[in-house]
Length: 578
DNA sequence: GCCGTTTTCGGCCCGACTGTTTTCAGTCG
Picture 1: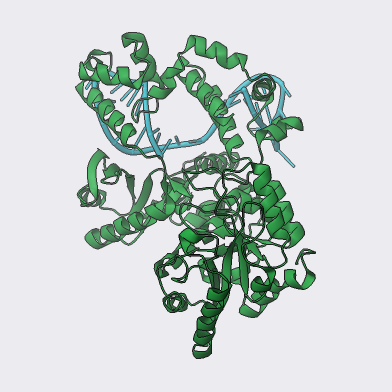
Picture 2 (picture 1 turned 135 degrees about the vertical axis):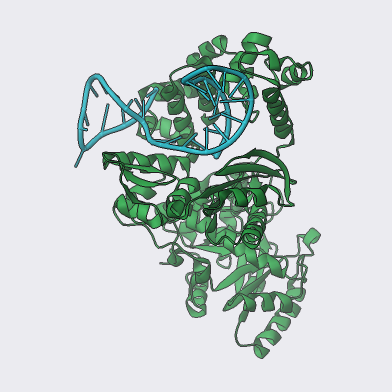
C-alpha cells in the first residue's frame, strides 16, 4: 500500500500537481510503512484515519483497494501519466520534471530508451539542457545500475570511522561527527553524512575529495561536497562555522519527519530552525545553535537521542519530559549467545572468554549448535558433557568471568527439540532456534515455536522472526502471536545483533516492551572473538526500540540474571516473570 | 491532501549545488 501511495505521489509530481498534495501522499506512505501492524487490520477496525497523515480521501482509496483490489484514482492517473515514468525518476539527478520532458519531447518511457537517447546525444538539445546535463544523467544511470540498495549498518560503520579518522588526521579538525541515518543507527544506510565544524571549509573539502577511498566527485562546493567511494557508497560532507555546529548536527541527523515536526513547533513559538542556528522570526535574532542540546532546550524539550528521531512519538515524549533513559553499551554485563570451535565457531572457548573479559563482561554463555544441525557440527549429549568439563575447568581457574554452559538447541520441523529434557536440564542457558524447514507455512512455524516455548528448559528464542535484511522475509510473521506466546510462557526473545539479522526488529522490540511488557536479551551470536563487537549494533537496535537497561536481561548482575533464567524451570512453564 | 490550544480555510521546513540562465528551475537531502 505504501508503494502504491508513493507511486501516486510520483505520478502527481510528474503531472505537475500541487506539491502539497504530492507530499501528503508521500507522508501517508511513510506512515503506513512505519506503522507497527498490517494496514489491513487498521482498515478492518475502520480506523485508517486515526493514522496521522491519512485523511478521508486517502483512507477511501486504501479501502477501495483492499476491498476490490483496484483503485480507480490510480487507474485514471496512469491514463494521464505513463506509470513507466516512475522508473525514470529512480535515476539520481533525474526528477519528475525532466521525466515529463523526456517523455513529451522524445517519447522516452524506459531506462533502455533513455540509455539509447543518451548514446544518440538527443538530450543535449532539449530546452534548459546541455552536454553537461546529458553527462550527469548518464552517470546517474550507471549509478542506478550499480546500486545494491541500502547497505548494512554493520558494514558502513567501519567505513565511516575510517573517513572520520582520516579527516581528523589530515586537517586537524576536532568537531566532527557522523550525521544522518548513520548517527541514528538505522539498520541499513543509504548514504553517509559527515559534519565538520571549521572556519576553513575549502581546505577541508580539498582534503576530503582527495581521500584515497574516493572514486568519484559528484559535487564540490564551499560548504557541501558529495563523493562516491570505490565500494559504491555515497558520502556527503558538510562544513559549518563552529558557532553553527549544534544546529547543523541536529539538522543533518534528521530524520526528515522529525525535523519537519521540530520546525513546525518552532514556528508556533515564533522561532525558525535551520542548519545555522535557531532564530527569532520577528527580528531575526539568533538565540542558539552552537550545541545541539540548545535547539531542543529552546523548544521546551528534553534532548532526544538520535536513535529515537523518527517522529514516532519521541517529540511528544520530549515535550512532556518523559523520554526513557535508553540502554547503553556500557550497561551490558555479558553475552548470552556465542559459539565456539566445539560447533561451527572459529575459536576455542578460551579465546572467546578472553575476548569477553576484554570487554569487561561478568559472564559469557557458550551456546553451540546441537546435534541435528550437522552442517554446523552440532553437539550431542556426550560432546556437551566433554565441553562442560572444559568450561568448568576454565571457571575453576578464572574468577573474573563466569562461563555459562549453553546451547542454541535446534527446533525440529515438528516442533520438538533435538536434545532430551534431561540433557537440557544440565545446562545453564538454553536458547531455542529455528535453522531448518524455514519454508514451512507460517502456521507450521508458529506451531513449532509454540511447542518450543512451552518447554520449561527453553529460556529464550534466538533470532525470533528469522528475517535476513535485504535477503529473506520473516518466517514468523504473526508478531503478535509470537509476543503473546513469549509473555504467556515466560520465554525471553532475543535481539540478535548480527549485522544482517538485527532480529527482533526495532519496531517489534518496542511493541514487545510496550504492549506485552516483555524483557529481552541482546546477543551477538558471535562465531569468533571480534564479533563480540556486534553488541553495539544490538544495543543500537534496542535504543531504537526505546528499551532501557531494565528491559534487557544481560544488563543484570550475574545473580539477578541467573534468577531470571531459572524462573521458568521452577514454575514449569507457567506464569510471567516480573 | 492533511490539519487545527490562532480549526472548516489557509497554511504546509529549509537551504545547497548545478546547469543554463542573465534571475532561476530542478533536484536533492
